[in-house]
Image 1: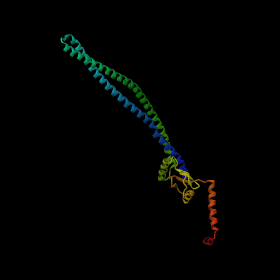
Image 2: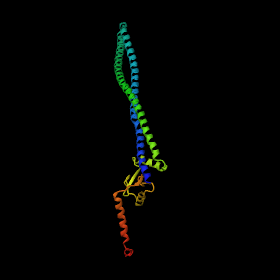
Image 3: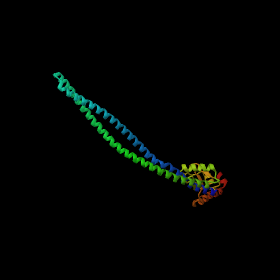
Image 4: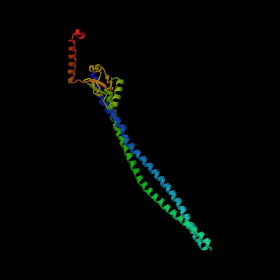
Length: 262
């Protein structure tokens, strides 16, 4: 049985390494995921700004047309000034010219605002496009690195699996399955020693009879508290505890039964 425990301790080392490698393989793409999320946000922002720029350009076109219409209306009214013959006509035409002039000026101010908005958006789009291209390059480089790293980790993982198969030959498959689950859930510790009746994995004191069965070491036993496989580890205090127990038994044998009855 000691040989089995030794195999389990060796297997524990290999399994722990393999499980750690699997975790690393799982973690590797997460850095890429963060960069891809950033790229998606940048693309969304770029699209929104580009849509705003297109809308602003449409608005600029509309305002320019209205301004040109107002300008033509003013010029037409101004040309008619020489044709009028009455004060009333003069006043009416003057109002038309004033209204057309005010509209033309208002449209011009709006055009300036929209033009400024387009200018700002254009600068921002240029900057974000550069950032997008840079981010895409970094992601492509990251993908290449990830493929290389995963391939290396897969090679190591396969080496661990091959070693596991060699170590676990002729071992109970059910125990191996449980052992691997324990190692995954218990920070790499699936087999631990019992020292002075205490499980060194969870530090719980084991029932005396159970601890004695572990000490005998003729079967595979699992800790009732943390489920780890247990084996007995000799210490200097083991003999002292055993001698103390024997001494208590021998002293009790010296007590007369009649004395106990009295």
